[in-house]
Length: 518
Picture (cartoon, rainbow, N blue to C red):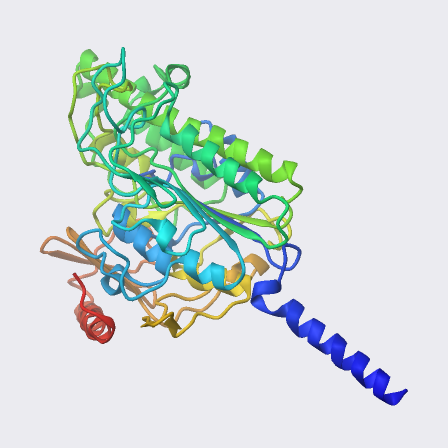
C-alpha cells in the first residue's frame, strides 16, 4: 500500500513538472501576445495621446490598459525593428548602419517558439531575411523598405502606373514574390495585412498553446495613400493650421493627465506660420494631413477587426496587446508620380511642418535623437494581467526591453546558445512588473547612435547630439528638452560622453566575439 501511495505521489509530481515546463504551458497559463507596430506615426497622432484622428479602438486599448510616456525606439525604422525583434541594440545585431541579417542574436519568433508559442508574423520586416526562416511558423509581408500601399508591384490593367521608389520582395512563408503584384484590385496594405493575420489566428484557434502575433503595418509611412471615403472624413479639417492643431493636441494631453505643463512645456515649434502660406499651399497641406489621418483611421478600423476576432474566440481576457510606433513622425520628403495625392499613382510625403505637429509636444522628428524622433506612444492592454487599468506609466523603457518582458511572461529563459550558435546577451530589462503597478529600476543607461543623432539617457540626465552640436537636459524635469545645460554642467556632459563612447567600444568588442558586424 505504501509503495502504491509513493508511486501515485511520484506520478503526480512528474505530471506537475511536465505541465509546468515551458513547452507545455497552455493558454490559461500564459497570455497570447500581439505586438502591433505602425510606421512613422507621431507621438500625438492617436486619440489617447491627444490627437484628433478617429482611433476609438486604439483608444480603448489605451484607456483600459497602460499608456507609456517615456518609452523609446531608435528614431529610424530598421534599427528599431531589429531592437524589437532581438532584444539587443542594433549595434550588436548588425543593423545600426544599414538593414540586413539579424546577426549574433535570436528573434522573438525563435525565443517564443522555445516556450511552445505558435509564432506568426505579418507585415513589414525591413530586413534582408525571410522571418519564416527566423523562428516564425508563418510570415506574410513586405520583407524590406517602403512600398506602394495600393500596388507594390507591376502595373495592372486599367490602372495608373504605381508610384514606386523601387519594387520590393514580399514573403509568403518560404515563397518570395519579387515584386508582388496583388491580384485583388481592392488590395490596400493595411487591409491585406489584417486579412492575413486574421486568417492565421483563425487557423490555429483550436490549439492548446498560446500564440505570438507580430503585426507590423506599413502605415502611415509614405506614400500618402488612402481610400477616398477615409480621406473625405478629414478633408478641410486641417485648414485651421499647424498651431491650432498642435495647441489643441497639447491641451488634450494636459487635460487627460498624460503630461504636466511643468515637466513638459511645449517645445518651440519649427513649422511655418500658417498665415504666410498661399491658399493653394494651405489646400495642399490640408490634403496631405487629411490623407495621413485617413491612413491612421484605417489602421484603427483594422485593429477593431482584430479585436473582434480575439473577442469572438473568447481570448480577450488573456491576450496581451502592445501597440507602438517604430519612430517619430517623419520629415523626409519623396516625390514620385504625377497622380493626385492619396492615389496609387502618386508618392507624396507629409513633410516637416506636419511632422513637427505630429510629435507634439516634443522637438524634431524621425532620424534625430531628440524626443520627437525617439519617443514612442506605447500602449499595453491585458484585462487578465494589468492591475488598475487606465494608468499612465513613466517607466523609461526601450524596444530592447520587449524581448526580456515577453520571455518573462512566457516563462522561458533566454538561452546562451541557439542551435550551434552562441548569441549575445540581451541588452534590455523586463518591464513586466509595470503591469502589476511597479516601476522597475534601471541601473544601466539607454543609448542611441543613428546617423544624425547620438544620445544617452542616465540618472535623470540626457545628453544628445545633432550633427556636431551637443545639448544636455535634466530630462526627468524637462521632458521636452527646453533648457540646455551643456555649458553649465560640463562635468555631467563629460561623464555621459565617456559612458557613450565606452558603450560603443563594448558593442564592438562583444560583437567581435560572436561574428563581425557588417
